[in-house]
Amino acid sequence: MKRFGLLLIGVMLVITTNCNNQQLNNRYSSNNLSFIKNDKLHYNILLVACDTCVPIINKGYRVRVKLTDKQKSIVKKIKKEMWRHLLSDKKTDFAANLILYDIYDKDAILLFGLGNNIRDWRKNLKRDDTLFWLKKLK
Image: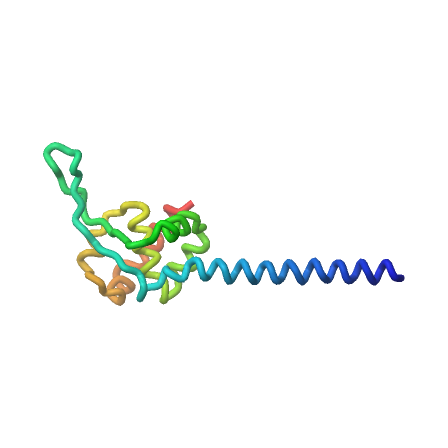
């Protein structure tokens, strides 16, 4: 009977520890991605030229997001399901889209035409952009 009690305590301890670790991992994960917010992200949409080409030619409009090296490292490790979540959340959808444009060097002429208008992006481009990214991401 004493062994059973010790075994039960041991099992409860393992379960409690696993639950606490999962909560810490969830908190750590959301803190890591806290920079991906529509109202926090700094970016530019620029006309980029190929300076190694002769003659120099325009490559098109590209998004350049201002991220620290640590943030760039985090972004490269984000899984498809997390991108799906970020693209569907109204607080992160536009920021996630811009980061993906930057990572994949996608032509951003349509974004350039919208300016910084998130409402117009949601109305006109969000659906197509989201479908594109979900197909593109592994």
